[in-house]
Length: 66
Image (cartoon, rainbow, N blue to C red; front, side, top):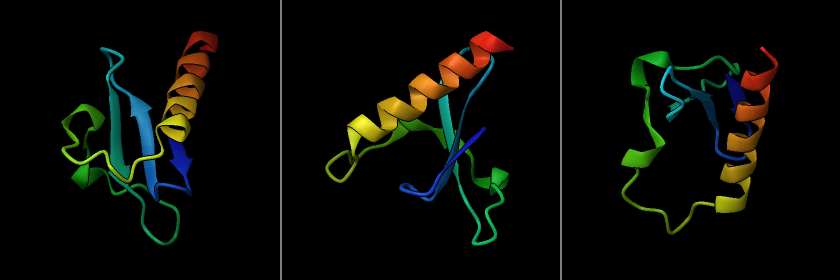
């Protein structure tokens, strides 16, 4: 799980390598009761795709190491 201060969310890959997210509380902990898939986002107009791809890349690299 990776915390993104830019998005204010935690991101991770599920067992099928789908990119998931949940909001982050002010204390930096993930709000896992509100998890969902990034692919379900409807509005991409304000999404910095390069930052999102960087997060995805880091998660893939981290998973390969484990």
